[in-house]
Length: 108
Image (cartoon, rainbow, N blue to C red):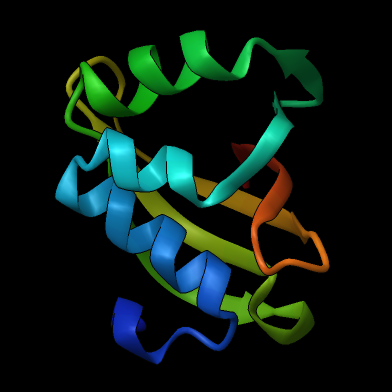
């Protein structure tokens, strides 16, 4: 069963999912601390390049099926125009100011 983004527990993660699904690059970037990092399938990637390729130029969309760790770990069906739909896991490190310092994703 899908969890509606508005019902996600962690405010930063909720905003992240909403920005992805709204294709709001500017809003997405405002959720990250300066110098934020990310990894995909265990490998660190260039964040700006990755989000352009995997989210914003390919119509990325997340449907969250499950959350844990207080809302900072998600299981989600992620789809984009490049790869279609896949089951993915996401974990988030949220800084003291409430913005995301790091996120990691990969196939679940």
